[in-house]
Length: 499
Image 1 (spheres, rainbow, N blue to C red):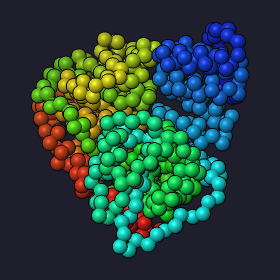
Image 2: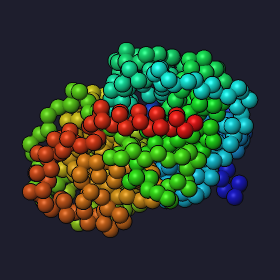
Image 3: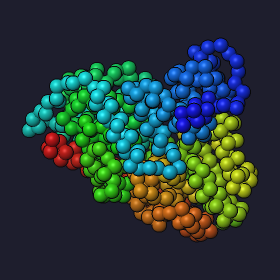
């Protein structure tokens, strides 16, 4: 098995350039990756790994490039090998956990066990510290601390910014701990809204925990989970009496020091979801998210294509696309013979990735001309204008979209989703339920195809949805920012009282 893994990562059978030294090869791979020459970069990393099978930099370079090349199974193997070589590295373990969610088939108990072990390792790495002091609440505001690397022009901002803006400042003080060096206009808005702002891009877990303890935070909220640049290591020190995870990660953290995970009854139905989380699940009625549409979003174009020329789309991260989804989307295109599919994702800027995706559809008999691929679009308005010419958005499975689903609905494009058994495959159902669109939620593969094809053939319904979706969304719980924030604040109050 180990030899098979080694051969997979080292690319046995492929020609690799003969350049001396693993370190030199890694540097060359890094340079090529920055230029976008992904296949050549991968060759260098593989050569470095073949020369030095304990070279972490080669494995991590391989993993990162493989994600952009749409080689997800191989990327997970690279991260897994790196984690085996560096079992105490929280960053590598988190990268492995994060990318395991892109698998076509999810073994939920095994994934939970992997998170539980990661949580235990984080706790073991944390030096013993004095327990957080639970200050008396009578006559004072609760102090909330939000920890995130995404207080910037990032998709998470569409969901956290309205909450911070609508917090009742007579009842709550808001501190933001920003774990990234990037700063933009959205960062400036967050900074202006916060009662306390801390830049922590280079602060380690123990230092951050000490800072949080000194700030007297009552409720500390993780907004990243095991995603990149997370600060779960600080949570392991338990610097606040109540610690919560919410929003930025589609799973449990596995960390015993985090008390609560915020969700809803559709995204995490009881009782089965409770057994797959180390945290206590608190379900918010009406949905666990609220969405703030882009302030500069263009008006919805009053246009729908006829059934004979319907255009499907998916603007989700291409990493969420797997062979099972290619098969289902191909079945939908087969059932609507003159339809097209538009895919947009940053890695599709790379010719190698675009070719791999198009070839995967050709294997199911779909001609390349029926699938259009687009890469990153810098201007947000231009990106949103891409919804003008499409009719139906197809959600990914088992890792559903979130921002892309809200965005499509806001631009008048209905979304068809498939609901599974775990949180990441039920977010679409949660969002569509909040928008009153339960009929667009499928519960198996055939149902997903049937709903998409029926909607493609129902021009009148598509026209009605195009005209009314923005108003539906505006009137839904998803855009009730103040109402959602009051619910969230009550969760904080109730959970803190129980500490």
